[in-house]
Image (cartoon, rainbow over all chains, first blue to last red; front, side, top):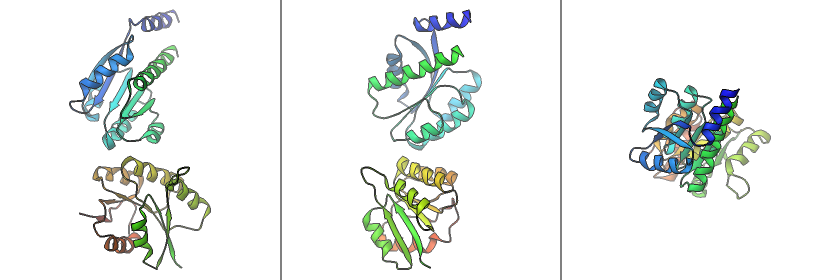
Length: 140
Length: 131
């Protein structure tokens, strides 16, 4: 109990780093990483980047992540989310796409679905929501 | 008995081309501000007379959402999805929906071909590949 409290305090103070995996289209990953780091502030994120669901699934086999972020357009994003959910059903997942897949987001228990273009405030809200959920999970 | 084909997300011009074939009863469910065509179609499937085939004409994610919704409402209904994006074909297959790639270059010809093929097709099979 005491340990959990200390961990949560650490995270709230910005001392703890959340281990996040970002799957974004080629040449977009750095832009999204920058936006995510800014949106998460003062919380720190450790972001591992990749460009495809296949790569992300491989990385997931090597180490666990506290947060998954998929920024892939069209059916590629849907396929990535489906595969991720099969592999990691309980990890908070943020899905950003160019089309409205919100119903599929609901179907696959995605924590937040955002349709592009995504304003900074919306990204911050979604990320904060994911981090809150993460805290709740840790409390459990 | 005349078979009913229900359409949603289909433009009026194509619906008219289908209506010219007297052997089928064509019902087109248009989008309205307060209710989408696929939702109206789902209600019709529940409350109305039997439908032999539902044709979905929305493109991309919108079409996939409509197909998924209709399949959820009715697991045995024959559904044909007209979509101009080939990458959605596996998703259609997953839902047991027949996929028709690309838009029709010749409406009249396409309508005749569609009606001819519609009752022979099996779920998940592509019945037409337009150029």
